[in-house]
Length: 101
Image 1 (cartoon, rainbow, N blue to C red):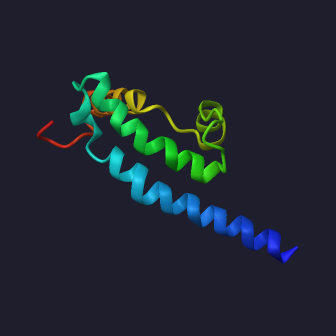
Image 2 (image 1 turned 180 degrees about the horizontal axis):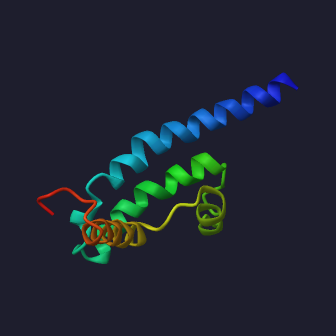
């Protein structure tokens, strides 16, 4: 029983580590990626895909799209950019954003 708890806590720490050092860095200032062509965004997606495979213990030939949406609740990189811009515009309309925006 304790081996299961240790394994579960290690996977939780591993997921937290990947989220902290990979996805948070990609999300930082992701609005500047808004005009990039799909080829350049594909490079960023190739960073996220192996991280998802490591978190979910998914084989390299397995499909990760369901796991990303249903379990991790992550958006694709293009959708993240659109969401960040929409959230920024929403805060500006409600006067909740910084004064220079």
